[in-house]
Length: 400
Image (cartoon, rainbow, N blue to C red; front, side, top):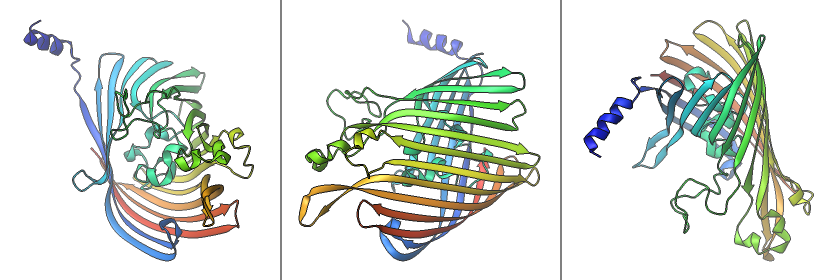
């Protein structure tokens, strides 16, 4: 066929709706102090930090493709991204086609944030959130440090969702499916024979992420609540030193992982409230030979807010993040004999913040946050380390 004719036919079939380009950017000044910085490997040291940062820039693309279809993408730049200087990160956080058959049945296909609790799908909409540092499970600039991908399912590829109205109540549902945990996925550096694609499940990995959220809200959107669930598998320690130690065979293989979540929010006049809780559970049966060893995570946050006017928002944010992780130690007398131990890390945080909306495109923000950390080594002589992190941030959020 003639290529010119093909191009003409393609142009004739393209929907007339224009591509919409918009986005959000947030930058801040960070003043911080950590006392007894054991998390940095320097217990007893007090460390100060003062820095500017382009915290996050998201460029959104949207195009309507006829009456029932649309396209959406989120291109994310993190922390002063510079490919030459190896700063920050650049990633496609979302890129999906959306089929909207009715309010009761819709389909997203592509890369997307799955429906889990209330904030996961909107965590990159900085313009509608009052925070500079979001609740830790959703803070993209700290995702590696907090292990956020273990706490919430970060990426799905197919989601069925919809809403059913009964009188003045709306019942929401979502079912989604994605690839295995990132630890399994093929990368450019670890590709094996017959691995045809990167960023995908490699040959031999047949399990996937599956999950759901069921929610209820009223038609005036003054309150909503939901329950969330996801299931996938996660590896423990595939290191040769563990594989070759018969006593530690319980820690080999792929461990079933459950995430259970709940969320609730409501408004009353100018006051608003939102809270979430997440529990990450691993199959404990495989650890039956080590009854003192636990592995899992817990996260929760509660925000009390007050809209003083159409421009001013004040809030108090309380959150906690805890977890029990398995590690291994050896003795100088027998370095090849590894013994599992339990590492318990707990953090509690309190923030106060304010957001002032200059206009529809710009918001000025301030946030003061204090976080206490406690690290406890169990299964051996009890050892505790404690530190405190105090932060003050001034930020600007731009919607374009």
